[in-house]
Amino acid sequence: MKNNWKWFLLIESLLLIVALYQLINNLFLLGLLVIGCWLMFLGRNQQKRKKRMYLISGIFLSVLSIMSLGGFWYMSIVAIIFFYMNYGKVFSKMDTFNFQQAPWNEKEIVVVETTDSLPKDAKRFKRNWIGNERIGSSIYEWDDINFSILMGDTIIDLGNTILPKDENYIVIRKGFGKTRILVPIGTGIMIEHSAIKGKIAFEDHYYTLENESIKMYSKDYENQARTLKIVTNVFVGDLEVIAI
Image (cartoon, rainbow, N blue to C red):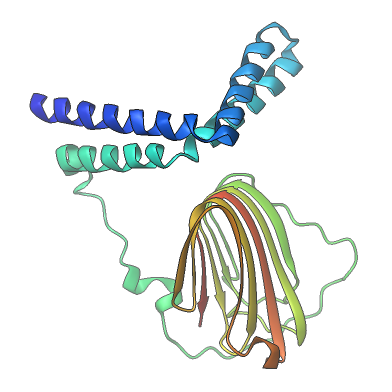
């Protein structure tokens, strides 16, 4: 076990050097880190309210800078593999999730029900800042989706609603976490996705984004009676759009 720890620390040290090299050669990320540390330093002598604001802003910018480095993720992967190989027995009694039984893989006949129309004025929706969420677990009347979340995985299922003809919108702003959107077949889809770090999967196409934006259209988008425009912005996280 001691030898394993020696190798682990050696590899992590080398990856740390790689991360520092990446940071030094990326002026934008280096600037974010410097500003974050500077804000935390300034906050020491501020009043309680301002001190908290400076501290949160400084930590956020510093963490964002570090998590945007490839070396950081390599270190994390090595750490996960190491602890799993050496301490994996701790988790052996935990049940594993069977992805074959995932809700989006289940095949069944659903008779579409109808609901009474809801008032169109001054509707308010409460969203949690942190946590996983599933939208569309039961029959519901469609309305454009627009929300922000700091951290958490999100599943949006459009199989339990009827999209109106013409254009429909899903707008999501997220800090960290994965997003999966299930869209009925026969819907034209436009995706405009931006991410500091993450992947996107759509119609057998897979892309890795690093501080990039991408715009994609489904096949026969212009010929579909119903279209869905998905606009997402994330710091770190993946987006998957699946036709059902």
